[in-house]
Image (tube, rainbow, N blue to C red):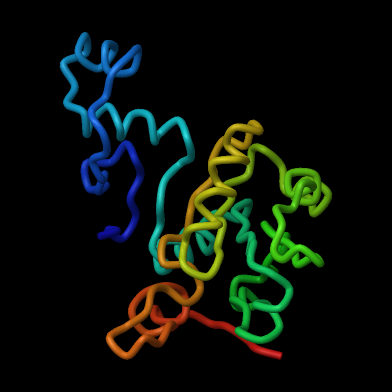
Length: 185
């Protein structure tokens, strides 16, 4: 479960355990007296700045004039499902597709980093990435951290969140479920 604002470095962060660790990471963890979970948290901290729930993302965008929200869903999702509305904060959502529709189906946007830079997002700004449920946005946060962007966050739960008990999105977690402003064409 994602706390109000979690970071892989935070004690509140939930880290799923994976296969047993071996090699340099495990050896380094053992030398530091870290458990496998703590070593995984330390490794995740290098991947991106952490996960934020929708309310924590809104609060960051409200208090930090440099912080930006990047919606990395597809054009179809922006049009048909809706988009966050940051007008109340005097900001606009930056839209850069993580994947694009092609004759072969959805394909990775090979120009993602360049399009983000062309949209005016600098490596020094806090960047919150948002997708439908938090998977694509986490990948975007990791990629851009590796590209030198210092503070990339994933909006866990995304715009619509996971399915609820009735297999509907938008009620269990995410931007919509948090009651944050959004618009639809």
